[in-house]
Image 1 (tube, rainbow, N blue to C red):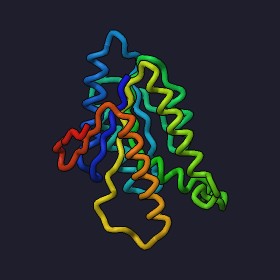
Image 2 (cartoon, rainbow, N blue to C red):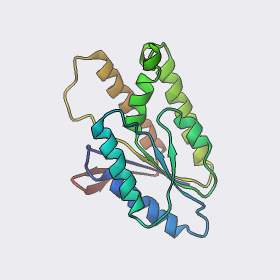
Image 3 (spheres, helix red, strand yellow):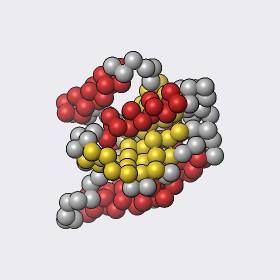
Length: 191
């Protein structure tokens, strides 16, 4: 089944577009689609993120369709491996997951970003999990944020984040059947 990648600016309409696409595919494939799955990477660490998560949840509830929500702020590869043939899956979003990956372990004094090879292992495991889905009957729609229009930062950690995100975006687009960019609720198909 195909992999679809959707990117765009913050609050650009990309999640709404991705949800509509997932629902349309679910109904198109209703004889085969088993579940409509939403993989959420967000963690409500502050009031703004809590409001964003609640807004996304309310949006899904108002659609009149049953989503199975999987909370996956850290173990994305494990979550992807738990999917079944016939699932239509929306993962929202890569940038949130990557931020979580960077700082996983911070509460114990050793964030992943400070551990040699930790981030590389997480991305490698994720790529393997995504590749394994391509041989199954699973529609995977991946949402991410576009962060590359701004000038380089002097902060080494921020630049490492942007480099890893950019490399992952290039990889996932190379694997995707379709790639879209959403800005101001205007959709541009790149692939």
